[in-house]
Image (cartoon, rainbow, N blue to C red; front, side, top):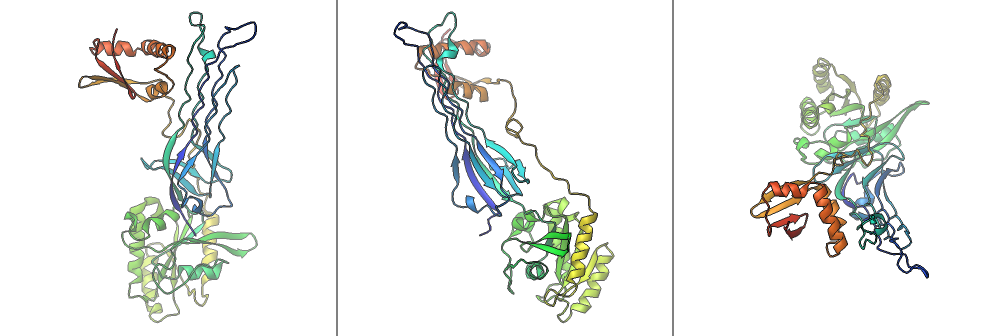
Length: 426
């Protein structure tokens, strides 16, 4: 089964917790702190696998989670890092953030990888918090949570030439005749429910990939019928062969069909309607075809289009059409690949911000929040006196206490830091 779109949830592993431990040996019963750090949580990585052709693997399983890091232990032993989770996708897969619709990555090349969710950093053991005045810290950091998000995977076919046109104009028949592909063919609408690919081999050293793409109806740019499925797959093609039922065998005017399909292309994306396009007037073996052909050819050639008379059923004119498509491809400059360079720090929703926070008042409650505060509070154990003292010290050093004072905080007022509420006392 061909699946070209899937929505999945990915969760990176949490970091392991730091250890609270002290050296206890025969002749040193009260040694210093030696708690080790927690291990890093595993990343969720997406990798291109050229052996895959669809997103079928993600049709039923929707949740994917990497391993968490192990907790640290005594004698400064570092917890084991969580194992990365690698998800394979076919080339041509676009990854989007489900919430915003923004593109995260465009996966084109074999072996290309992106860290889609970064594992949480392991918490530091109590050995890191020893100072000249605090020689026996009884607290350690908790591991950070791994990133998590819903993503949408969209497969856009990587073909040189795309066959476009209304349903039942003969696109599948053309593909079956000029290549070894064997698409399902029938005399009814929307025969092609999935894209089909075939390799057209004209002669040694002259070949290209041809895609038979699902048919189009009015309103496709808004998602009607198979609209978005159709339009998504022609975005990467270099040349379009616009197939017309020149005989008007279903009671439609082929020239009107041409206008309507191109209108939908222009409404979806300006780049689609600007692609090189040649016209294949199919079904020339049927009555009324010759009369319509002269009229359509005259109108379209006046607009700069090349028009070829063909009959897929009798293999008439197909060789000439395919050679012309190859000639256009060969003359075109290599299509620029619009890759989005991706690293863990360059994804659109990750920024190298300073440790920011905001302080505001809502009603009688003072609220301190922000991305840094959330991460900081994940590492604090408020039920441990040493950890709580560390929390108060950081709040003062970062200027948060001063901000609260400027806003008029008084003893007994409620201050909410992240998800926890405190009563303020100077």
